Length: 229
Image 1: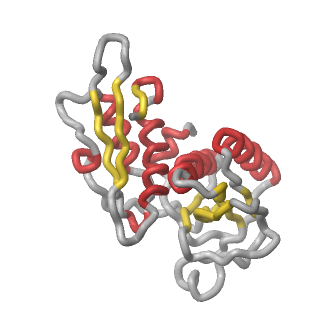
Image 2: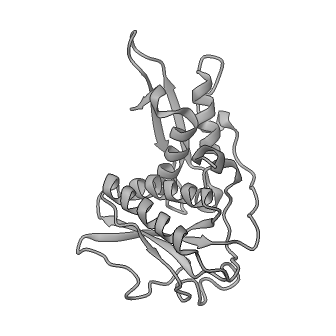
Protein backbone atom coordinates (compact mmCIF):
# COMPACT_ATOMS: atom_id res chain seq x y z
CA UNK A 1 0.00 0.00 0.00
CA UNK A 2 1.27 3.47 -0.90
CA UNK A 3 0.56 6.63 1.08
CA UNK A 4 -1.94 7.65 -1.60
CA UNK A 5 -3.71 4.30 -1.31
CA UNK A 6 -3.76 4.70 2.49
CA UNK A 7 -5.67 8.01 2.37
CA UNK A 8 -9.18 6.68 1.51
CA UNK A 9 -8.98 3.59 3.75
CA UNK A 10 -7.58 5.23 6.85
CA UNK A 11 -10.20 6.28 9.45
CA UNK A 12 -9.91 7.33 13.09
CA UNK A 13 -10.06 4.36 15.47
CA UNK A 14 -10.46 4.72 19.24
CA UNK A 15 -10.82 1.11 20.38
CA UNK A 16 -7.97 -1.40 20.03
CA UNK A 17 -7.42 -5.10 20.57
CA UNK A 18 -4.79 -6.53 22.90
CA UNK A 19 -2.11 -7.23 20.30
CA UNK A 20 1.47 -5.96 20.76
CA UNK A 21 3.25 -4.29 17.90
CA UNK A 22 5.73 -6.74 16.32
CA UNK A 23 9.38 -5.83 16.76
CA UNK A 24 9.84 -5.33 13.02
CA UNK A 25 6.91 -2.88 12.90
CA UNK A 26 8.33 -0.92 15.84
CA UNK A 27 11.70 -0.75 14.07
CA UNK A 28 10.09 0.55 10.89
CA UNK A 29 8.09 3.17 12.80
CA UNK A 30 11.14 4.39 14.69
CA UNK A 31 13.15 4.63 11.46
CA UNK A 32 10.37 6.66 9.83
CA UNK A 33 10.11 8.90 12.89
CA UNK A 34 13.88 9.55 12.74
CA UNK A 35 13.53 10.66 9.10
CA UNK A 36 10.58 12.92 9.87
CA UNK A 37 12.30 14.49 12.88
CA UNK A 38 15.43 15.11 10.81
CA UNK A 39 13.41 16.81 8.06
CA UNK A 40 11.22 18.89 10.37
CA UNK A 41 13.12 19.64 13.56
CA UNK A 42 10.26 18.10 15.56
CA UNK A 43 10.61 15.71 18.49
CA UNK A 44 8.12 13.01 17.49
CA UNK A 45 8.46 10.01 19.83
CA UNK A 46 6.97 6.51 19.82
CA UNK A 47 5.77 5.02 23.11
CA UNK A 48 4.96 1.30 23.25
CA UNK A 49 3.38 -1.00 25.83
CA UNK A 50 2.20 1.89 28.01
CA UNK A 51 -1.45 1.54 29.11
CA UNK A 52 -1.98 4.63 31.29
CA UNK A 53 -2.05 7.62 28.91
CA UNK A 54 -5.53 6.81 27.58
CA UNK A 55 -7.24 5.95 30.85
CA UNK A 56 -9.11 8.15 33.29
CA UNK A 57 -12.14 10.42 33.15
CA UNK A 58 -11.16 12.22 29.94
CA UNK A 59 -10.80 8.98 28.01
CA UNK A 60 -13.73 7.11 29.51
CA UNK A 61 -16.06 5.85 26.82
CA UNK A 62 -13.88 7.18 24.00
CA UNK A 63 -10.65 5.18 23.96
CA UNK A 64 -9.96 1.63 25.03
CA UNK A 65 -7.08 -0.77 24.63
CA UNK A 66 -4.56 1.94 23.70
CA UNK A 67 -1.07 0.89 24.77
CA UNK A 68 0.94 2.38 21.91
CA UNK A 69 0.99 6.01 20.89
CA UNK A 70 3.07 8.78 19.35
CA UNK A 71 3.92 12.01 21.14
CA UNK A 72 4.08 14.84 18.60
CA UNK A 73 6.18 17.66 20.03
CA UNK A 74 8.69 20.26 18.95
CA UNK A 75 10.29 23.61 19.71
CA UNK A 76 7.76 26.37 20.36
CA UNK A 77 7.17 28.59 17.34
CA UNK A 78 4.36 30.15 15.34
CA UNK A 79 4.65 27.31 12.80
CA UNK A 80 4.82 24.42 15.27
CA UNK A 81 1.18 23.34 15.08
CA UNK A 82 1.06 23.26 11.28
CA UNK A 83 4.45 21.52 11.05
CA UNK A 84 3.28 18.93 13.59
CA UNK A 85 0.16 18.24 11.55
CA UNK A 86 2.05 17.97 8.25
CA UNK A 87 4.72 15.56 9.44
CA UNK A 88 2.55 13.73 11.95
CA UNK A 89 0.07 12.83 9.22
CA UNK A 90 2.89 11.40 7.11
CA UNK A 91 3.55 9.03 10.00
CA UNK A 92 -0.18 8.25 10.36
CA UNK A 93 -0.43 7.26 6.70
CA UNK A 94 2.81 5.29 6.89
CA UNK A 95 1.43 3.39 9.90
CA UNK A 96 -1.66 2.56 7.83
CA UNK A 97 0.57 1.01 5.16
CA UNK A 98 1.96 -1.25 7.91
CA UNK A 99 -1.55 -2.47 8.78
CA UNK A 100 -2.00 -0.25 11.84
CA UNK A 101 -4.92 1.93 12.87
CA UNK A 102 -4.60 5.35 14.44
CA UNK A 103 -6.33 8.42 15.83
CA UNK A 104 -5.15 12.00 16.33
CA UNK A 105 -5.79 13.07 19.93
CA UNK A 106 -5.78 16.69 21.04
CA UNK A 107 -6.91 16.65 24.67
CA UNK A 108 -8.14 13.29 25.92
CA UNK A 109 -4.84 11.82 27.05
CA UNK A 110 -2.66 11.86 30.15
CA UNK A 111 1.00 12.84 30.17
CA UNK A 112 2.89 9.96 31.78
CA UNK A 113 6.29 11.03 33.19
CA UNK A 114 9.24 9.13 31.76
CA UNK A 115 7.53 8.12 28.51
CA UNK A 116 8.98 10.98 26.44
CA UNK A 117 11.73 13.60 26.53
CA UNK A 118 11.31 17.30 25.90
CA UNK A 119 13.84 20.08 25.57
CA UNK A 120 13.45 23.34 27.52
CA UNK A 121 11.68 25.03 24.59
CA UNK A 122 9.62 22.03 23.45
CA UNK A 123 5.84 21.77 23.52
CA UNK A 124 3.53 18.78 23.01
CA UNK A 125 1.02 19.47 20.22
CA UNK A 126 -0.92 16.19 20.09
CA UNK A 127 -0.79 12.47 20.69
CA UNK A 128 -1.54 9.84 18.05
CA UNK A 129 -3.01 6.53 19.24
CA UNK A 130 -1.63 3.53 17.34
CA UNK A 131 -2.38 -0.17 17.23
CA UNK A 132 -4.66 -2.83 15.83
CA UNK A 133 -8.22 -1.56 15.91
CA UNK A 134 -11.31 -3.56 16.80
CA UNK A 135 -12.64 -2.19 13.51
CA UNK A 136 -11.17 -0.21 10.63
CA UNK A 137 -13.22 2.83 11.63
CA UNK A 138 -15.92 4.64 9.69
CA UNK A 139 -16.03 7.45 7.18
CA UNK A 140 -17.78 10.70 8.12
CA UNK A 141 -19.77 13.28 6.21
CA UNK A 142 -17.42 15.79 4.62
CA UNK A 143 -17.59 19.02 2.69
CA UNK A 144 -17.41 18.95 -1.11
CA UNK A 145 -14.24 19.68 -3.03
CA UNK A 146 -15.91 22.88 -4.27
CA UNK A 147 -16.31 24.01 -0.66
CA UNK A 148 -12.67 23.27 0.15
CA UNK A 149 -11.01 24.71 -2.96
CA UNK A 150 -11.65 26.80 -6.04
CA UNK A 151 -12.06 23.65 -8.13
CA UNK A 152 -13.68 24.32 -11.49
CA UNK A 153 -13.37 24.01 -15.26
CA UNK A 154 -10.34 26.31 -15.28
CA UNK A 155 -8.32 24.33 -12.72
CA UNK A 156 -6.23 21.26 -13.66
CA UNK A 157 -7.10 17.69 -12.73
CA UNK A 158 -4.16 17.43 -10.36
CA UNK A 159 -5.56 20.33 -8.28
CA UNK A 160 -8.94 18.62 -7.97
CA UNK A 161 -7.16 15.39 -6.98
CA UNK A 162 -5.25 17.29 -4.30
CA UNK A 163 -8.40 18.86 -2.84
CA UNK A 164 -10.10 15.46 -2.92
CA UNK A 165 -7.24 13.98 -0.90
CA UNK A 166 -7.43 16.91 1.53
CA UNK A 167 -11.19 16.33 1.85
CA UNK A 168 -10.36 12.95 3.39
CA UNK A 169 -7.89 14.38 5.92
CA UNK A 170 -8.75 13.99 9.61
CA UNK A 171 -9.55 17.25 11.41
CA UNK A 172 -10.60 18.15 14.94
CA UNK A 173 -14.31 17.29 15.38
CA UNK A 174 -14.40 16.87 11.59
CA UNK A 175 -14.47 20.66 11.22
CA UNK A 176 -12.54 20.92 7.90
CA UNK A 177 -11.69 24.59 8.42
CA UNK A 178 -9.30 25.01 5.50
CA UNK A 179 -9.33 26.13 1.88
CA UNK A 180 -7.01 25.64 -1.11
CA UNK A 181 -6.76 28.26 -3.85
CA UNK A 182 -5.25 27.58 -7.28
CA UNK A 183 -3.32 30.31 -9.09
CA UNK A 184 -2.31 29.67 -12.70
CA UNK A 185 1.35 30.13 -13.69
CA UNK A 186 2.18 33.79 -14.26
CA UNK A 187 4.33 33.00 -17.29
CA UNK A 188 5.65 30.12 -19.37
CA UNK A 189 8.09 27.94 -17.49
CA UNK A 190 6.68 28.77 -14.06
CA UNK A 191 4.73 26.41 -11.85
CA UNK A 192 1.21 26.99 -10.65
CA UNK A 193 0.85 28.34 -7.11
CA UNK A 194 -1.44 26.97 -4.41
CA UNK A 195 -2.43 28.90 -1.30
CA UNK A 196 -3.53 26.91 1.76
CA UNK A 197 -5.61 29.00 4.16
CA UNK A 198 -6.85 28.04 7.64
CA UNK A 199 -10.32 28.97 8.78
CA UNK A 200 -11.49 29.96 12.24
CA UNK A 201 -12.90 27.66 14.88
CA UNK A 202 -13.80 27.82 18.55
CA UNK A 203 -12.54 24.23 18.80
CA UNK A 204 -9.03 25.31 17.85
CA UNK A 205 -6.46 23.10 16.11
CA UNK A 206 -7.00 24.85 12.76
CA UNK A 207 -3.25 25.12 12.13
CA UNK A 208 -2.67 21.47 12.97
CA UNK A 209 -5.61 20.54 10.75
CA UNK A 210 -4.17 22.67 7.93
CA UNK A 211 -0.84 20.86 8.21
CA UNK A 212 -2.62 17.50 7.96
CA UNK A 213 -4.64 18.71 4.97
CA UNK A 214 -1.52 20.05 3.24
CA UNK A 215 0.09 16.63 3.62
CA UNK A 216 -2.89 15.00 1.93
CA UNK A 217 -3.05 17.65 -0.78
CA UNK A 218 0.60 17.13 -1.74
CA UNK A 219 0.14 13.38 -1.99
CA UNK A 220 -3.00 13.70 -4.09
CA UNK A 221 -1.81 16.53 -6.34
CA UNK A 222 1.82 15.55 -6.74
CA UNK A 223 4.45 17.97 -5.40
CA UNK A 224 6.00 18.25 -8.86
CA UNK A 225 2.94 20.08 -10.19
CA UNK A 226 2.94 23.22 -8.04
CA UNK A 227 4.63 25.42 -5.48
CA UNK A 228 3.09 26.58 -2.22
CA UNK A 229 2.43 30.31 -2.07
